[in-house]
Image (cartoon, rainbow, N blue to C red; front, side, top):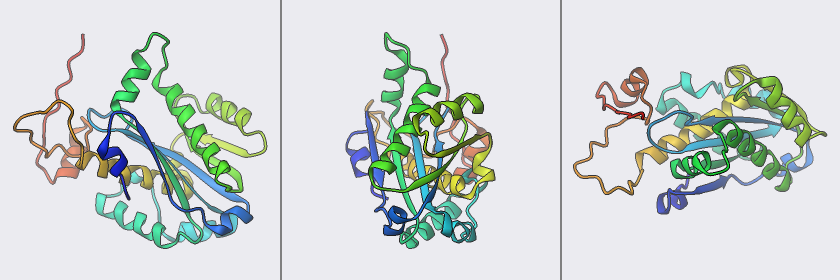
Length: 233
């Protein structure tokens, strides 16, 4: 996964995508939406979509994709590599949002909260897939906020597409699990190669995945924990 654009400038946002499989332009497709990076102390928020023809959904399920939070980093990398091998019927796209962009959005004169930013980013990726020629028939989304409100909003944006928004969708629908894996693989890579604007001295880079959750950090760093301190005023 080429994140060189983000590595050159991690203060804005960047979008990445796979080639669109020819079959996804012809046949009705199912598309999943999920994110990684809501609530960390370090690194970007990454939104991802993954899609495939409805006729090949069983083939996607056969890859044994699962909620990325239940998988180790090596398992996520292995599954993403499998999806890349199957790019004749599987496609994906990412929107990587920097901490600077998120903070600027939320702290501006006109308030733009994280849920609204998340909803707009997800809708933007679905629209991006449509612009790329993907024949999207069904969309499944892991919810942010109330699923009923979120689903109604997306359904209004895409009236000709069947939209389903659920809590824990990344554990319920394989296509959302696949999107979850794409998002987490990209975020893990971004955090590993993160360039600090602050020019920090003697930085211990063994900070895991960038979350304050000690158990996840320990799992990510093999037991060597870094401490993240957050000041609140």
